[in-house]
Amino acid sequence: MANTISTLNAEALSLESVSLWSVTWKRLLRRKSAVVGIFILGLLIFIALTAHWLAPYDPTASMLDIPGYTGQATKRLPPCIHLLGCSQEEPQHIMGLDGNIRDEFSRLLYGARLSLMVGFATVTFAIVIGTVLGALAGYLGGWVDNAIMRVMDVLLAFPSLLLAIAIVTVLGPGLINALLAIGIVSIPAYARVMRSSVLSVREMDYVSATRSLGGNAYDILFRRILPNALTPLIVQGTLGIATAILDSAALSFLGLGAQPPTPEWGAMLGSERNQVFTAPHLVFYPGLAIMLTVLAFNLLGDGLRDALDPRLAHVS
Image 1 (cartoon, helix red, strand yellow):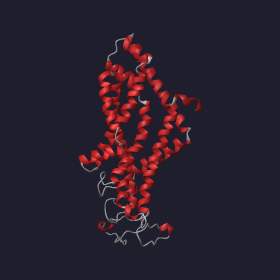
Image 2 (image 1 turned 180 degrees about the vertical axis):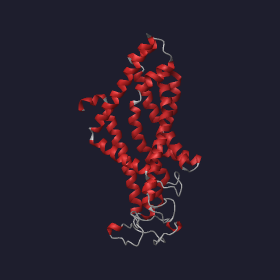
Image 3 (image 1 turned 60 degrees about the vertical axis):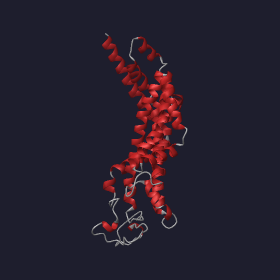
Image 4 (image 1 turned 45 degrees about the vertical axis):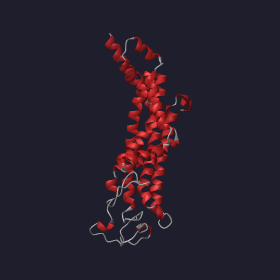
């Protein structure tokens, strides 16, 4: 009998979960800004996955090192697009060559792969650690809550980018250290969001019923409370990816993130910042790519926030 009731409850929860996400998806698609964000993000993911096919040249190789290259690769060249009148005898570089005589278009395509990887990796790391800390703080309370939250408060007392710069300075420049630094400074935001959600959910009737039936702390926290407290983290994580990409670009711009010749948008901006007047296209394209990526995640995050908010259900 108990097994039957447990099975029915599991099926009911599964159907409720499917219904929730299907309704959320429908609400999301009704918001034009969210659809724009999804489109831009889908395009960026496609570019990242197919960069090795779309890129005409090796993003880290100078044109001088490519056998059989016939272009005048002895200086930085402006964009050469055959359809716009560039001589057919010259190799096509639709975004020109950078200061190290590398194809800017190829580097921009591969930069999408790296930037998305940075965003997803750092946010995943921060969410996992922040979720565990926030859940323990909210559920256990007492001295555990005080100890965890005071550490989070100390981290939040510093501007996130300055703290990330300090961590990278101690660990040494490099992409992995930059990822670790951005992840560490992002943990407090997710921990506080999770703690708030757990404090709210743990007072629900179904949690009290599970507790009165003799459920152990592990089952109550990880099977009852946590699955129902994840919704705010989804929105926070989506918006956090945009912040992580910006922070990574800032660290690379300062020479603390991705190191040459890695094709990373922030590093591309930093290496060509002195050419903003003589070769503005070398600064414009990476900056535009960063702007579009951050815009896509912000639009998607705002749409998810509205779609998951039950107070806005009447709008749908």
